[in-house]
Image 1 (tube, rainbow, N blue to C red):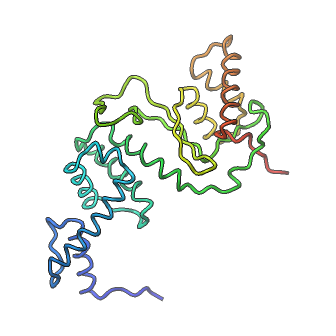
Image 2 (image 1 turned 30 degrees about the horizontal axis):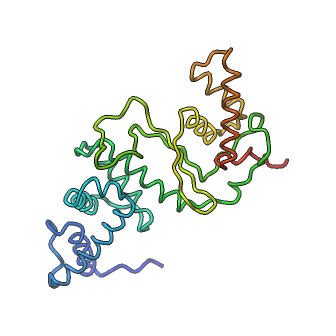
Image 3 (image 1 turned 60 degrees about the vertical axis):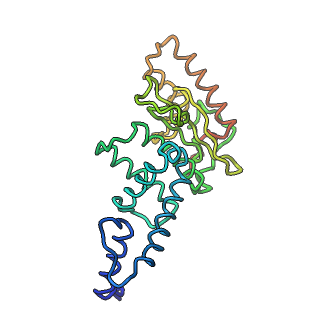
Length: 264
């Protein structure tokens, strides 16, 4: 059975209504509706969206001030076609919009997209659904001999800008020479915590998380050492340092243990 379609006249009113809400300055309201009533809808829809984005991106909200912030939100509301009706996904849609603005060279601060991602990650990880299967690991196994397993609730992040430091009196125009490496973790109580990572910690977690070939912890560290230009004489010490790091990450439940291979 085909779904029922709205009559053409109603469909025209719906399109006009939505267009006016998104861009009241350019799109006239549907005929026959007094402006007092339309104003209620305009304010309700915009204020709901603006409040949601301000809650998701509080640092950006403070940095931009009232006029610039509202202009950005209204541009997003007018220009961006969201791919989902879910309120929890509006932050991701805002990221897509900022990415397009950056590609178009709209004159935003160079750190804006990375800062938005940093702020969005907290909500994204808090809503991340994890299957119990993804948490199964041998918690006591040798991390060098086995295949280390990264917790799905631990995300290593890399940014060109020190996003965790950006505020009203620190808005860098150029990225520093060294990137910023962070780890965001959701703990057993559901709290979201950010921690700084050194380059070895970041690249090790990236290697563990993308280890589709099932390389052992020792093999991963060997590959990282070679890529970093560590000579053969120094490689055992590099692996030993990496082993201690893996152990520390396991104690913090960032590394769950080693993969449990299916029987048979």
